[in-house]
Length: 109
Image 1 (cartoon, rainbow, N blue to C red):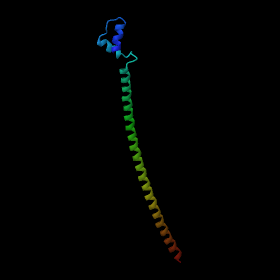
Image 2: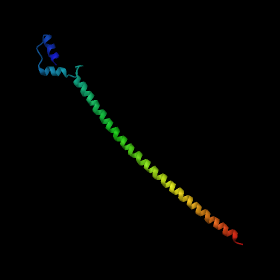
Image 3: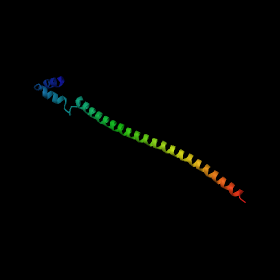
Image 4: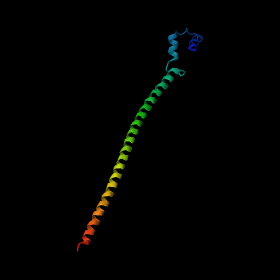
């Protein structure tokens, strides 16, 4: 800012007021203005953090659904194994009944 004030005096112009100096320094047209660059970077950072939060939330939801699907699959596998065991037991019982029936039929004259 001091450079801007001194530059006006060297050019033969009247010294700039503090308001004019600040206005020139933070002007969006001023390519050396780090204020607006920092503001833009800060805005980008806020947007990035919002995107990150949304992705994190979405990931948590996907993880919950995945865990629920895995639990349902495990339950289905357990039920299948139980049904398979019962079917095998029923087949053995049926086989014994058929054998007993066949033995009874063949022993009759």
